Length: 269
Image 1 (spheres, one colour):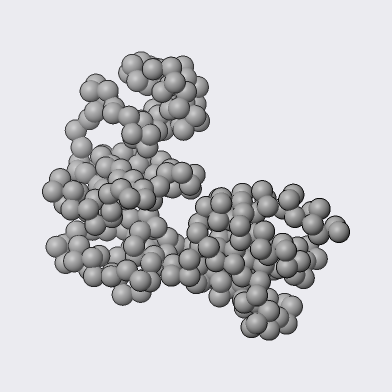
Image 2: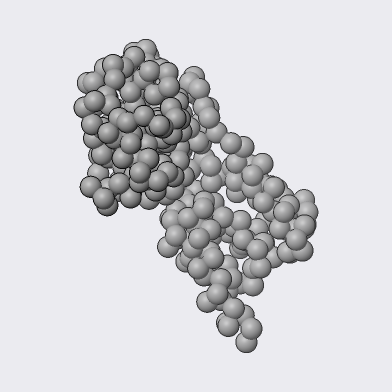
């Protein structure tokens, strides 16, 4: 159990001793810390001990992409903690390439008679997907909440940042630092977040640096989200002489950082 304890402690950002106290239902742990440990158990796929299971006000499905990207476990932890405080039991559904699809998870959740479903960066953020799936859920009626990638035509609560403004602010920051050759790397164009961030990036380059449409297009590399995709895309832009890069995700930024040292000798010749 020690390896598991270490994993749970790392996820909950507490000590292994605290994890042990929570699992063994011992006193001396605040309600907030106790919930963080229980949420970490859920996120990591460990079953809660029988004595820690409480009567629930209902089940709420939480459908998230793969947990390799640290932002999604962070979303899951906050959402699960909030649901638990309201007496609901979260049902975490994690997608992975070649695994259970979003639609299959929805069918499983409906069979369990969930009280609602929260979708994080789901198919609603993909412009090529059929959004009728969400309209059918609303017609049941079943409450749903959609996180990231705001999409019109779905009358449901959305929680999403202003991606266009984010792209604009990122360029403005780099320009303020003195950069004039600014590139952008991001995931596939079919995602609404990518389209909006690209629109903000384009608008800022044209407004602040007078860049032409062809110059903007030549400074954009769209590939797969992830560290590897970020590294490949950044390497291509660095070869073009770009000195600053707007990244579509944290993992892509890590890939860009990995590409930067390799580019220095080439650029110095």
